[in-house]
Length: 247
Image (cartoon, rainbow, N blue to C red; front, side):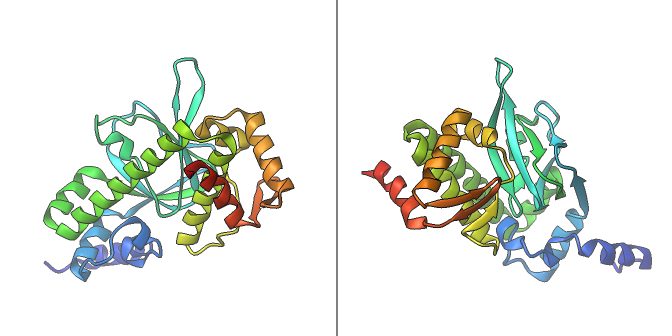
């Protein structure tokens, strides 16, 4: 059925927000779709949402309706522990998905908070499911994305279970470096969007321990730190700290 002129205009207006025109699409949603399939996916993802620094994208306990692809910005997810403390469960950047925590029991199990002004693409989950039943490539890709999240969570559990403080911080910095590189940014120079305290919460370390590890890395010439700006000077050196763990 041909599109009415009004719908055509709206489509042109939203295409800037849509997957086919997004430089993150290989990271976030699939390539390998036909033009027609891509157009159907574009129709689905036509709402962008801006979230100011410090604002919640969603909160634990809210009904799960959508997943979100981060278009720009940086988020943390956290859960409230019984003793009233926040436990950081992850940091997410452009090209990654948020909201998958809600799929299993139809309510979000954590909070998602913007660490800087951010923008997300809003993807209604039931419509994504319907579409992925019809488009095999999309379904396959979505399973891959889910699997990647599970593997990452598993990696964090391994990290927290067995590594010493400095190994944890080295692994964290190397992981961030790889993720920035995949987005075409420098692998060796980036701003940390999160506080030392949030890093500690994520890595299961006290704030003083995180600060001490940062200072030691700086003294040993592995990194240069200016407030939140990090320069990795010696990637092999950080990897070596990790390899002590593997022996």
